[in-house]
Length: 219
Image (cartoon, rainbow, N blue to C red; front, side):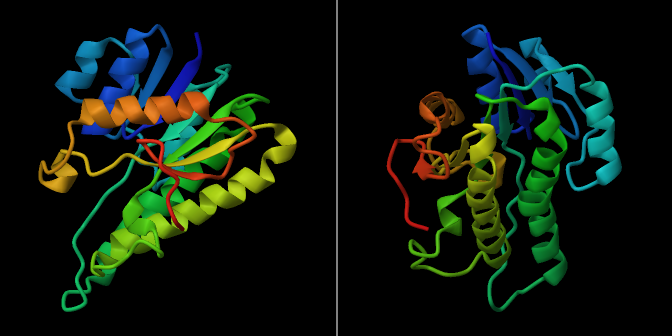
């Protein structure tokens, strides 16, 4: 049994990750700002009231986790807002960057001392952050913040090689959640693919940008 910590655990993908990992006997710590009925029903350990954009909230999480060793950290928390060239809301762009990029890095940095050789770090990013795959434009805040967090993941993969901690940079696919206006594949299918990629993550493929279906994606 391994200990998994999952941020954004109250969303569609996050709750499914918690459920599927718990079903196979893993120890799950679900981190979120607000819990949900679906998450509460799972019976996993829920750490709510954690806003990953705030230093004091992450410090509170660290206090709650005193003495806890983390085997797999899944940075799943994220936000998507629509920003076209004709409607550039810079507050929205900053908000997405704070959550998707800086929030992920803030949590990962804070938890490094709770990780060990053989632990894994996972960043749930998006194909929409791929520069090579962008043929439709738009979504400035989301695309930019996801490209940035993918770069953070690649740097982490290099920096943590000496500590034998691999980093996976994963795209779940277009998933039917509130974020996507319920367009795409079911969250349970996305979670299943993500878990398969996480299981396969090791030092030989650290820093790779994967689709949950196993396809290697362009940067």
